[in-house]
Amino acid sequence: MPISRLFRLLYILLERERVPAPELAQTLEVSVRTIYRDVQTLGEAGIPVYAERGRDGGVAILPTFRLNKSMVSAAEKQDMLAALQALASTGASDRETLGKLSAFFGDRQTDWVRIDFADWSGARDGLIPALKAAILNRQRLTFDYYNSSGVCAPREVCPIRLWFKSSAWYLLAYCMQKRALRTFKLTRIKRLRAIPGEFPDEALACAQIEPTDIQPDTPPVRFTLRIDASMAFRVYDDFEEEQLTRTESGDFLVQAAFMPGEWLISFILSYGAHAKVVEPKALADAVRRELEKISALYKT
Image (tube, rainbow, N blue to C red; front, top):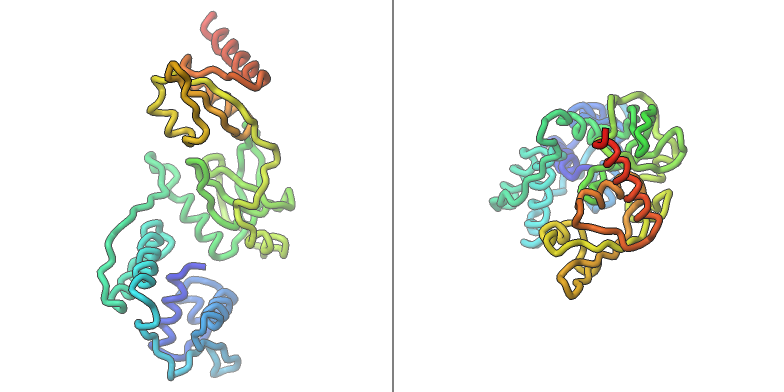
């Protein structure tokens, strides 16, 4: 849940003390159920916020409560402002909240980071905001998805979170067709739209799973490459130091493990004549067959 929304809710209650839940939901652009979840979160954090039902009810805060800026240390203030500044940079928070909190703490926050989810072409600018809204509001999504074999099929998912891994963005979501947690590469998602429907219990349970706990459907391929010393500028971009051994000639012996598929062969071929698969033989044969196909294209 966005930290900025909790602060906005708290500011509203500090100013008015009691506000109907539907009015809060409309102001913060979330559901009434989300408001009640936020109230529970604030209560668990020690802030005396509570909900009253009935005609004169609403969400209220004890009138004796005051937000004391001495409750947090200077380091904690800096961490909070830095986190909000990063969220504002991504669009997941608004700068008004950041400004209010900066003024409350009496600090000027350094503009320390810029995060831009859009690609250079601008063609996919609307994808990240749509995914963000669906994740925060627990909204089902449907889209067409191209798998690694190039087959396009419709998917219906319950989005859990965005995940950046190995230079690519993924959507971590509960797939209604597979009835399991799946990852979807954002560049392969087409014709995204929101649809009505609640998240099933198993999807809500998946929201508690960390991406590091997810095991791939297929194990990675362990391989050894010999890469020419002239490619040092790229080798250190693609691999970690502990994966590298230098030979007497200065060449690199790379021992790594990547996920299998056409992309792995393309990755190796992107080094051109500067890289050779030492092992396993099956991977070397796959690269050779791909080279033969490429060579055949230029013989005709």
